[in-house]
Length: 164
Image (cartoon, rainbow, N blue to C red):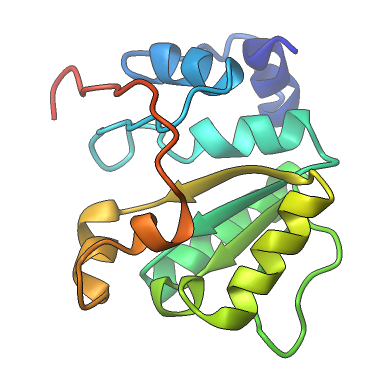
């Protein structure tokens, strides 16, 4: 799938283009590289790197670890505006189907969430795991590495920022 065309359909902006670090990062994501690290400033378009693939492949699930309540609410609102199914993780009511599942760092390492992740893996619906604001997330777990517990290292490329 052409991610730029998907982004244009998603946003309704025919002139939408991936810019700066977004371009090599979205290509790496499209190739299935892992991990992909995109260091970008606030407002640099990091969320587009997981929203566009989630929009383009609605049968799968993107898990996004989000440390801040305000950021989680903003992401939910933005996804809904763009027509992307997005839910916040709740252990007592795991989602059956959503393109994006938002989870706190604390819940991301819980047994219930691991069961949910394993179910997604077994059914081949887990598309990607995204750690948003990783500098904040790393400080929320005793060993500072939530992503190591959630997403095993598969090798892959690193996308440095042009101007971070």
